[in-house]
Image (cartoon, rainbow, N blue to C red; front, side):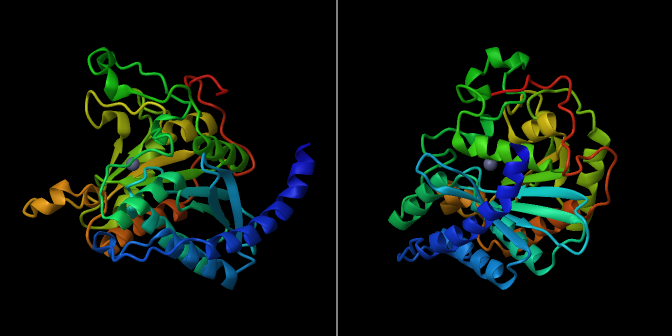
Length: 353
Ligand SMILES: [Zn+2]
C-alpha cells in the first residue's frame, strides 16, 4: 500500500501543478479600490505571483493540494527542494490560519518566491500561504463591500487553532473561572483544514515549523496548552535566539506560549500538535506589534488594521529574517529527519482524533 502511494505521489503532484495553474486563472479580481488593504496582495495576486515563480523553475517546486475545505476550495502547499544534494531535513512554514491575519500570508508568499529563487541545499521547505481559504474569501468579500468585520474562523466559524489534538483538554485551574477563555472545538481535528495539516505533518516529518500569525512580536514555542516546560526547551530557545539575532534591533521575543500570562493557555494549538505528535520544533510567530496607532482613533475601530499595519514591507522583511534563520540554523540533536518523525511525547494526548 505504502509503495503504491509513494509511486503515485509524483504523478498526483504533477496533476496538481496543472490544476493549480487553471485554478489561478479563474480567481476573481476585485474591482473596488481598497485603501485599507493597500500593499497587501489579494488571492489572485498571491497565487498569481507564485504561479509565475513556479513556471520559471518547474523542477524546483512541487505543487500539492493537501485537502479541500468545507466550500471545496483547495488548500495549496508548495514544496521547494534543491535536488543537487540529498534532503537532510524538512521545514514547514504556514500562514493564514486566522482569516484576518493577512500579514502572515504576505510573509509566507515572499518567503516562497525567495526560496524558489534561492533554494536551500539539503533542506526541503514546504510553504502554505493560506491554510484557511474559506475564511480568507470572507474577508476579501468584506473588504470589497467596505465593511470590516472581525474574522478568525473557517466557513462554520471554528477557530482552527483550537481544533488540534494535543493538549486539547483544558487542565488549567482557571478554566472554572473563565470557561469561555479555554474553549476549543467540539472534538479534535474536526475540521478539514486541521486534518489536512495533520496528514501532511505525519507524512513529511518536519524538523521545524513556523505558523505565522499576527500580532504581538513574539516567537512562541510549546507548550501552549500546559504550564510545564517542553522536553526540548533548550533547542527552542536556541532557535528563538537565532531568529531574534537575525531580526536585529526591535527583534521579537522568544517565549513559551503558555507562560505569556499566568492564566493563559491555548488548548488544541498547532504548535503543541506538531511538536507533541511528530517531534517538530514548531513556533507560533506573532508578526508585527499591531497596526493600531495610539494617536489615530480610526485605527482603533478598524479590525483589519489591528492585524495588518499600514505598509507591510518592514514587517515582511522582519518576518523573512526570522524564517531564514529558522530554516538555515544548523541541525539539532534528535530533530525529525524527514524520513521518520520523532516519537510522540509521552505525556502528550493519546493518538487518534
Ligand atoms: Zn492568529
